Figure (cartoon, rainbow, N blue to C red):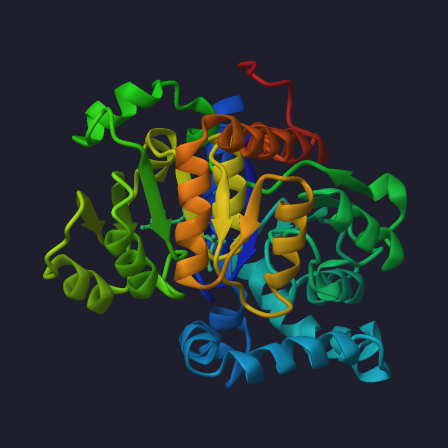
Length: 385
Ligand code: UDP
C-alpha cells in the first residue's frame, strides 16, 4: 500500500441505519474526489469497545423506539442534562475512554477519526487528550434541526453540520465558529449524480408514466403509520399510483403485498435505489428522519411528514415546514386532504418543490470529503465535481 493512502476511521453505531449510511456516503464522496487515496474502517464503537449494556445498543435501540418511544425520548432528554453535570464532563470520560480508545487505535491505526454518532464526540476528544495523540477528529452531525448536545465539543478539529439551526446550536454549545461549517446532511452522492428525468426514472422502475405518484416510506425499519395511511389513500380514489416502501419491516411488506388494492399500488421491501424512486415520485410521505428528508430535498420532492421520534426527530418537522419544503400531517385523513390539494393543483405542489430545493445540499458528501482530505493532509483531488 502506498504511503499516501490515509486510513479514515468512521466512529459509527448500528443503532438504526443512519450512521453507517452517512459513513458510506462520505466514503463514496472521498472515492469520487480522491480515488484510491483513502482506506475506510467502520468502527462500531458501542459494539466493539463498550461494556454491556452499551454493547447491545444496536439490538436495544430499534426495539426501544418501536415499543416505548416515550421512555426512549425521556432517556434522550436526560442524557442531554447529564452532559451538563460533573459526571458527564471530560475528566470522568477520559478515564473511562482511555483504555478502550487505545485499543481502538491499536486495532485500526486511523490517520483521522470521523465521528458519526452524537454519543461519541466527547469520548473521542477525551481519549485523544488522555493518550497525548495528535490524530485529527472531525464530527459530521447526522441529526438535522436540533442535534443532541453530545454531538458538540470544542475540542474537535472540525464540526460539520447539516443546516443553520444545527450551526447555532453548536455555537451555543461552545464550539468555536471557525470550527463549525454548514455542509448539509451527508446524503449519498448517488442522489446528486442521478441524472435521469422523471419519465426515464418511471420507465426504469416499470411505473405508470402518466399517473401522479405518491411514495410512502418509514425510514430503514418501515416505522410509523404506513398501513393506515396506505389504506386511507387507496380508499380516497385519488387516481394516483401509490408506492409503499416497507424497508426492513418484513411483516408489513408481507401484509400489504397480500392486500387487494383498488388503485394502482406497488409494495416493496428494503430498496437500494431510493434515488430512482424519489426522482420518479411526485410526493413523499415519510417520518421526519434526517436521511430521508435530505435525500428528498436533493431530489426536489415535496414532503408530507407524518411522524417523528419525539425530541430526536420532531424538531425536523418545524425545519421542513418553516422552509415550505413540506407539511406536517399525522392522521391519514389529513394526509389525503393534502394529497388532494397537491395533486389537484400543480402550482401548489411546485411551491413545495421550490422549498425542498432550498434546503438541499447535493454536494454535502463531496464537501465533507474535501474537509477530510484537507485535515488528512492528502495531496490535491484527482478529479473535480
Ligand atoms: N432506505 C433505503 N431503503 C429502504 C428504506 C430506507 O435505502 O427501503 C434509506 C433511506 O433512503 C435513508 C435511510 O434509509 O437513507 C433512512 O434514514 P432516516 O434518517 O430517514 O431514518 P432512519 O431509518 O435512520 O430512522
